[in-house]
Length: 115
Image 1 (tube, helix red, strand yellow):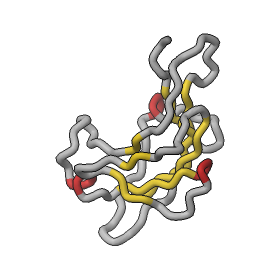
Image 2 (spheres, one colour; image 1 turned 135 degrees about the vertical axis):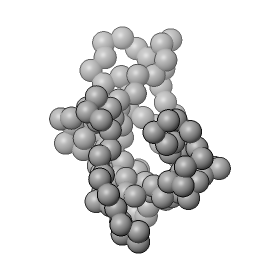
Image 3 (cartoon, one colour; image 1 turned 45 degrees about the vertical axis):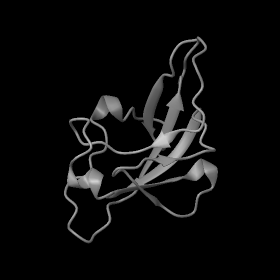
Image 4 (cartoon, one colour; image 1 turned 180 degrees about the horizontal axis):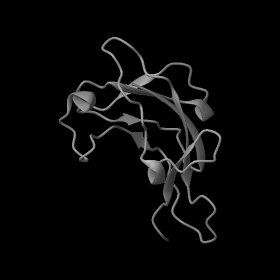
């Protein structure tokens, strides 16, 4: 079966975030929290052919070069909660460990991100 086809859309499902430059948070002052970004994480959005499922997914962060050595990543500055799993608290992601969401099944999943 074909590999999963992941896409990230705005929470209102109107804007393809990857095609529009990703998460544009601007400047956040030290000690402040960014505005939350609601994201719909899709597998095979609008697809007509079957693709592999995504179960027990892992959430993490990388820098703009795809690496894991920047302070944003190593310091776990990004946090997430999975609204569609009824999570209440944000969990820091990144660093040397990823955060496995054992019940996260990506079909149409709602995430909130903050920096």
